[in-house]
Length: 205
Image (cartoon, rainbow, N blue to C red; front, top):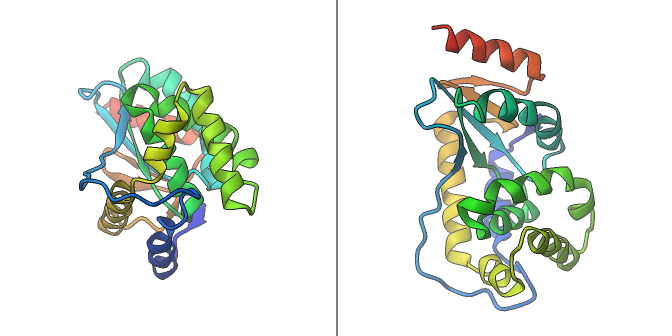
């Protein structure tokens, strides 16, 4: 689990909107970004995951837990799943901006690619290369360069996302990622068998 250092996170988040692309950072109308969800809102079990697109533990959770969770419980209507983004660094923020750029229809498809290809797109120390890597993923998901440039340079939305992340993190007492809430109860990272047992217990109530 990647740990959150609150002071460092605030400093990183404050700097994260700078140099999003070599283009100008544009002011936009105030935005109120929300979370993205999968599954039936009427499901008996509600799961919220706090995750960062640059967190290797989150990528491992996605590969070894989330895909089975989706197949067995989300797609079958038993679990309603919500992702809450955490921004350890500007790369993670930019990745979230690209994912959100696709809207509801493309968000989780881009989400999957970001985790599946994390070692590739996030490996460079050159911010411009990371932006290009992210845009390559966006293009594969059907996004146009002009749309991605607009999303990456939307400082108002980025700042609103950072504020929301910090507020939620502090309100829920999140200290690291991935952190999972099952019907409001906090759990740390775990293998699929353990999560499945918790879900089955909730379903049996």
